[in-house]
Image (cartoon, rainbow, N blue to C red; front, top):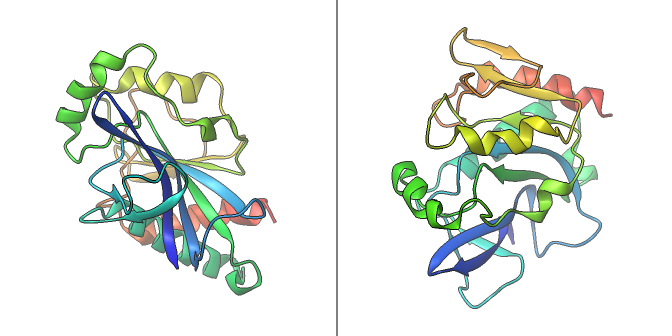
Length: 206
């Protein structure tokens, strides 16, 4: 049983991660009845690896030193508890992890360099076509190397419920962020600072 699942592909010897799911309760394997509760948008996948490099379908993730996915799960569990939602009654809930681009590298500078040969038609996760109950933006501050990747999420939002933590004013916001806004990354963000905001969005979807 595992909490963290994704599909991995090699493109020109670079590893890409798609359809990343963080299940709030461990599962044996994903199924069509699973429920996506919302999405988090990060920069790019970090150091987590496939558990089986020969498997092209959804598989458990080997986290390695990746802290982002466990932090996302812990925050979502706290928000459900605060909202009074019993996860035992619905064990197959997951949060979808989207990225500005999907090339795996735990060093953003190196990832930006590696993605350039794929532009402008870099591989995109088909999960981006879904409609989400809410989206949490966690892509950090303005960065010339990644700002243009934000446009596809801002031009055609896949939700009407937005949430992010504005690092510049230390405040949760519920409007879609702009490219130059500082949407604080989950790593280093106090859980207490964001849990109440996500709880609010969860209650709106009940």
